[in-house]
Amino acid sequence: MSSLFSAEARTQIVDAVREAESLTAAEFVVVLRREADPHWGAAALTGFVTSAATLMVLLFAETEFATHFIPLDLAIAFVAGVVLFRLVPFAPRFLLFPSRRRSAAERAAKAAFYDLGISKTRDRTGVLLYLAMAERVAVILEDVGLDTKRTGPAWASAVAIAEVGVDTNDSASVAKAVIEMGKSLSTLYPRKDDDENELPDEMVA
Image (cartoon, rainbow, N blue to C red; front, side):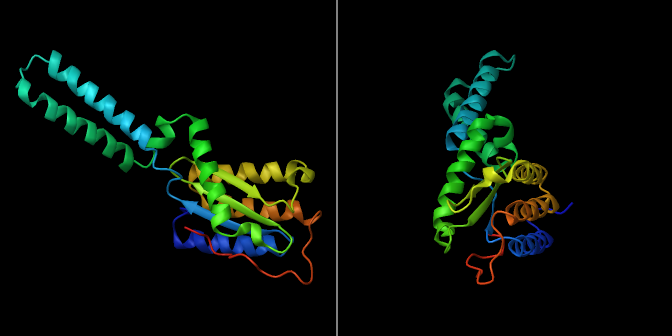
């Protein structure tokens, strides 16, 4: 298993994109992000919980504490909670509801789809695979020139492989997912002789 952030992963995914694009007119872009959103609201809530826990200790512990330092102690506890949430990579995964994590990743994916010009291919056949590592969510967006529902279970299977890849930080699974997406689209949207490579093959990180 190779981490998605390694040099080996970049090579694997570039090769997978090129293999997939040799099968179909679709063009694939893989975007890797450490987080889709900073989740400051959840960070603030974590800070509140740590400060509340600190207050309980100060009020009920057998040791006596100087009361005039309590506001400072609570402020420090709040900041510590916020910093802890921001520094621990898996915090969003365990402290946010799955729907919250997915909605954050979907918003970020839509922004990336626009920013990277994926909708500007000649036949509107761009596909974005957006990987949000802190949220452990994979989002796949395809342009209007593709109808993935017509591919049957093959596309859904490829999407499931991508989700496993981001959940386990496994580049081989992500690379396999890209190739399977290319295969699933190859019958309905075969590569044409005049197709040009309009989008980057390299993983965007």
